[in-house]
Structure formats: structure tokens, C-alpha cells
Amino acid sequence: MEKNEIICLICPLACNIELKVAGENIVDITGFQCKKGKEYALQEYKSPQRVLTATVRTTDKTRPLLPLKTADPVPKKLLIPCMKILAGKEVSPPVTIGQVIVENIMDTGINVVATREFPTDNLGNT
Amino acid sequence: MNMPVDVLVIGGGPAGLAAAIKARETGVENVLIVERSEELGGLLYQCIHNGFGLQYFKEDLTGPEYAYRFIQKLEKLKINYLLKTMVLDVTPEKQVLAMNATQGVIRLNPKTIVLAMGCRERTRYNILVPGTRPAGIFTAGTAQRLINVEGYLPGNRVVILGSGDIGMIMARRLILEGAKVEAVVEILPYIGGLIRNEVQCLRDFDIPVFLGHTVTEIHGLNRVNGVSVSKVNGGSSPESIKKIKCNTLLLSVGLIPENELSLNAGIKLDPVTGGPIVDENMQTNVQGIFAGGNVVHVLDFVDNVSWEAEVAGLSAAKYVLGELSLPTKNIKVNAGNGIKYVVPSYISGQKKVTLYMRVSEPSQNATIKVVDDIKENCLYKKRMLIARPSEMIKLTLTKRCIESLVKQVKSLTVSCVGGK
Image (cartoon, rainbow over all chains, first blue to last red):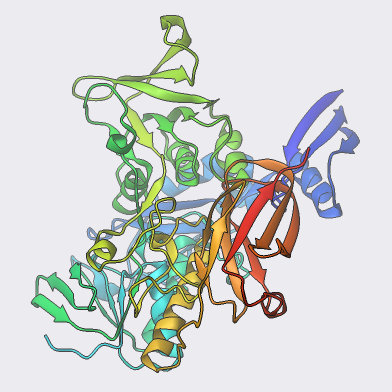
């Protein structure tokens, strides 16, 4: 049997939740103090998800980077592969906040969207 | 330049934006923000991670998105601002000297001032790390700006000293950008920042953490080539010192409210917070000068910065409109056992008030208590399963609770007693 410790991030209590796992089955789950915590620990064990925030290069020399995020959390194991896709991307302003920069990244069904606005009139090179 | 200003806000970061918007919404015409950098928003643009606005907007936003909401509102309200303009001096008479490259010297004489200068990072020289003076030593915030705004990676083998939130967030950013984080070193026996960051920035990427350790020497001639890490009170024998190879050292060793201007204006600072001593209206000891956000005390959530600065903006507006009644008495709020500090330092005892505080050390089953100095009457009591210095505690003394204060009360004391 394998033990997995998960720190719950639902509230500031930060319970230490312990999952006992035999093969594919969760045998026991202890340490949570509420229903949400139990659900969190199960989700975090089965498929941990994270919002990825990063940047991409722009063609605007005065504002070389555009910040962005995945519109929803993506599987944790895909964070680095997603970064590799973003590393090869370049965007040209104007960009509006929420604009889709990469559609369906790594076939997750989740879009990567801009988190700031780069209107053209702020360009240094036009 | 002769411009009538009712409320002058110094600083266009999250605190300044919130204060200016609130002042305008309260009915003051001439609100002006003076900002030294080339855009409004302060540090929010380099904080590209999420976790902002969970309380204020009930949404999970990134730093730039949080800034955007406030700036949109500011533009809609047609609030004036000066960019690339540095305030050089503020006198106790509220005369302000500023300058920029297009207008030259600017003299302003606003009716009120809101201080919203925020805070700055502690550097190597604040904590006196011994060793050589090579390139490759950055504060975490500088590295954050380089990576997230300017597009430079400051190094590819990194040791981070300090486990505050910025340090941990930078550990994750560095790894996502292809660098290796060799270690996070923390002098205290526990992580300095939020647990969410410990999990999602350090544990997610298996970054080695040395608690109760610190960097005792920086090595390298032209560029950092390693650091010595020693256990606190672990002696100085050579075998107790770990040498970690790296080419970059990031320092995430605390923030200091930026108050040089406040001192010029004759404002008294609290030696614990490093920020102005304020009353419940966020008014300083100089009448008509208010302060809000990280310039008063370093907060962990921008949501609290916005809320606190709104109080400062509201009070400044009321002062201009002649609606801010001077408190008939000042009740001192003391930080008692187990409490590092409390903001505000004074309350009037006439209206509901929110107190912000930090505990001195982590404890479980803690009881937070507010008692008066007369009969040791308990005004407020709150049990917390866990209280950590990294998490600001916010409590509100309701109108009813305030009304129960007897006339002779001169001070209140907040304390935190840990259980087993």
C-alpha cells in the first residue's frame, strides 16, 4: 500500500490529507475536515490541475512580452509541454484582453488567452 | 504649472488607483495621481501569475487583469494622472514638489494628499550577506520584472534566499522558463509565504528547501559561481556548511514601506511596520495627509491593499468636502502578547472599524482577543485553528461592540494566545 500526502488548499487551515492507495484503488482517505477538502484531495491525487500563466514574445520592441494564461486549469503534467509551445509563438499587437493566443493547447480543449491589452497606439515601432 | 488639486495621490499602483477612484466617486472633482513610472498599475504588470482578486472581485485574476479593471474605471471617471513624474518633496503644509521631463518643476498645493508609494524590496545590503561582489545577485522582484516584462532570464542555475511569496513564485517562473532552481533557503524554521505557493511553486517542481538555513557566503569573482549555506546556530565547522553551485542568487528577504516623502512631511512612522501611524480613517499625524496600502504596512493580498486604500481615498474626499469630523478622542490600539502589530494605531470609538494584524509566530488553536484597559473587558474574541505570521488577520469591531466601550477607555490591546 502506498501513502500519499496532500495539503488541502481550499481554506487557510491547510489540512494534511492522507490517501492510502493499493494499485489503482484508493483504500482510505483521512485528515480532511470538510467535504470540499475530501473532493480536493481526490481530484489532486487523480489529476492535479493548474492554471498556467506565462508570456509570449511580441513584435513590439517597447513591450517585448505579452502576459497570458490558460482560460481554465490544465493537467499539471502538461505545464512544461505547454511552455514549449508558447516558446515558439510570437504575436503582433493590437491585442485585447481575453484574446485567444493559442487555441486548444496540447489538445486539452483549453485556450490560452491574453491577460493584458496592447493597443497599437502604444507601439514604439510603428 | 498651476493646477487646482483637491486630492493628490502619490503613486499609481493598486493603492493609488483604488484611493483615487474612491475619492472621485465620493464627489471630489480634482483628483490627481502622480506616478513615477511610464504607466499606471505599479507592480501588477510584472505579477503575471493568478490569485489576485479572489476576495475583491470573487474571481481568480492575474496581476495585469486586476490592474486593467481599476484602470478602466479610472479612465471612465476621467481621473487625471501624470506619468513619468517624480514627487521630490512633500511639506507638512502639503506643498508638493514634483518634476518630469516635459513640464520641468511642478509645484502643487493640494487640499489633501493620499500616500500610496507602496514598498520596496530589501537588498543584500539590508541583510548583510558576506562574500564577493559578483554579477548575478538580484532581488526577486527585479528578476520578476526581467523575466515577465523585459524578456531576459537572469540566470539558469539559481539559489533563492527567502521563502516569501515572491521568492516561491519566482522559483516556479524560473523553472517554467527553463532554468534550474538548486535550492530555496529560509532562515526561519517555517516557510515565509502562503501555503498555496509552497504547494504549487515548490512542491510541484520538487525544489529542495532548506529551512532554518541561510546563505553565509557568496562566491565568484565576475559572476556568482556558488553560495555557502549554513544551518542557523549550527556552528561554523566546515562540514556543517553546504556549498551549492549556482550562477544566480535571488533575494526574497522582505519588503519595506517606502516612506522618505512621508518623513519630509513630518509624518510619524511605526518602527514595527515601517509605515505611517494612522487612525481608523487612514489619516496620519499630519492633518489632511492620508495613507493606504503597502506604504502603511506590507500586505499579502492586493485585495486588502485596494480596500485599505479606499478608506484613505474616502477619508481624503470627506476631508475636502468638510465631512470628516475630527475624532473627539483617540483610543490607542496596542499589539499585545503574540501580536506583531495592529493597523490602525488609533480609533475614535465612534464607529465600526476593521483591524489588520499579524501574529508574531505560528500557533494552533489560537485565541485572538481585544480587551480594553479599564476593566479588561473583552470586546472581541475569535478562535483560529491555525494562525500564521504570513497570513494577515482581519477583524471587524462592529458598531455595537464599539458602543459598548465605556467613556474612560484610553486603549485597547489585541493579543493572541496559542493553545496546544
